[in-house]
Amino acid sequence: MEKFLLVAAGGAVGSMLRYLISSLDIKYSKGVFPLSTFLVNITGSLVIGFLWAMFEKLNFTPNLRVFVFVGILGGYTTFSSFALENLNLIRDGEYRIAIIYILLSNILGVGLAIAGFLGGRYLSK
Image (tube, rainbow, N blue to C red; front, top):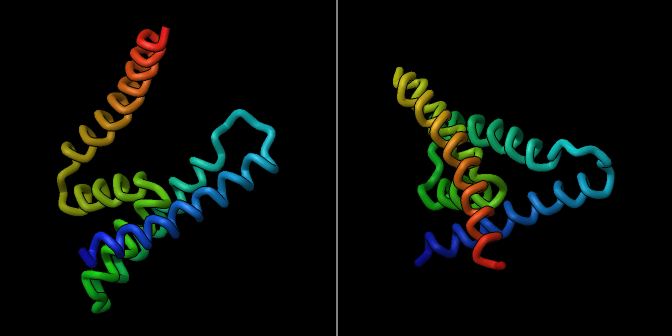
């Protein structure tokens, strides 16, 4: 139960940070490019890579790892987890699996979002 509470607390922090960035983007950006999502994804990826290296070298508790990685960064962006998984695949020499994972996640993710949208539109007629 403790880990669920840590995830929930961290998720609240990460979600609020994401909302803050989205709010600033909406307020100041006039473009079509989804800048806030892009910024959240790239900053989340940078932070998760940096913290993963730090957590490997320093003795952080499993609860702190859950709070930060699953909670805060999970609430901020799940893209950071995707980036970390690919980093670890590449670091382990699993280049083929990393490429397949990247391509399938992106192609299927966008394709299924389109399919879900079309299905929802069809059913809501």
